[in-house]
Length: 330
Image 1 (cartoon, rainbow, N blue to C red):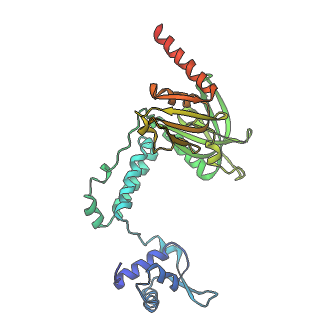
Image 2 (image 1 turned 135 degrees about the vertical axis):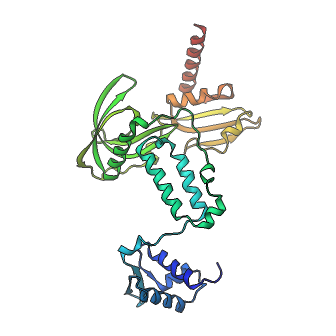
Image 3 (image 1 turned 90 degrees about the horizontal axis):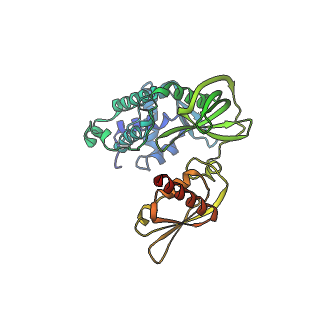
């Protein structure tokens, strides 16, 4: 970075100490990449202390001073924002459109406003202030409007943070029935325009997905649930292609060379293997469950994909094609 002025050193030291850690002068020296002498840093720490900054000094086992900042003072030290950090905030805002018409959407706007207040002038100049929120656009067809579910989303977030057991009344669109369950919320999931809650059903000993818009009632209980069922994302998504779960099989799909570029370079499933054929086609292999979502995805590629295996999936595709043909014949 070049030479530091004293004011730059003092501010940098305060920002490092505001993390709450105890830091020795040797550690500080490494943070300044040895551009400052140890003696200079020692004088800077004494200068801060003499200026009334509530620093605490303790001797370590190596007989070296370890410095820290009183906890009440840490929140008064703003950490500077870099240009890319400021732009990242606006990109995150664009990716949180699902909350746009909910109370949580207001919290996101409030956060961005607070970030604006601490952005240095040079960052404003670099980003041509006023256009930062135009940097990134997130477009997804078929987004749900979660305005009517804002309060429920807020309750679900509270339940996740506080680890509160919930009583949910849920509408199942497949059998047109509503049922009530006790669940233990783990996290929220956004997928293809929809918001879901990953919850733990203790009576079944399994994690399940609940669609937010199908939760008719949500009641937070006073009881907190124990941390005896750690969520394993690898295990949860192992057999799924999308959201549906089924018994895992090895699926092989051959894509024509005309659409090969749409398949390459993307992660469709963690188990995937991609092999290029001499004729320009591509074979995608995955270990997934045969689900309606997988079948719909395959049919979406039209004549440009052929199922090589397993036989069960080939038969499922053939049956779907017949039913589509009958629909138009009628």
